[in-house]
Image 1 (tube, one colour):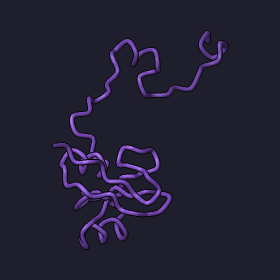
Image 2 (tube, rainbow, N blue to C red; image 1 turned 45 degrees about the vertical axis):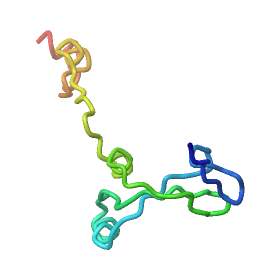
Image 3 (cartoon, helix red, strand yellow; image 1 turned 30 degrees about the vertical axis):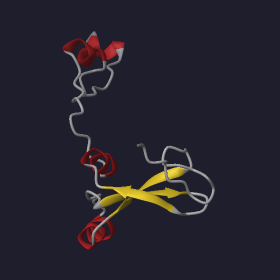
Length: 104
């Protein structure tokens, strides 16, 4: 038997657009975040209604935690082909020469 989805006082469920996934950190996570500006991996994620601020539950799912930590795992590295590189200048900029100085 399926359990009914938990709702807040406003009637929102986890899948509603006004329910946000808020990462919660350990003490060391907060130290990294506040003192060094490093986004650590959250301890857990809380689903919280933005209207009434009621919690609808939490999760420790590794996929959701990785998404909230800012880590892009498995993202392909973007590289330019030799043709794209030559069209964009190859990353090095050269000063344009005037026509007079090139004919002397």
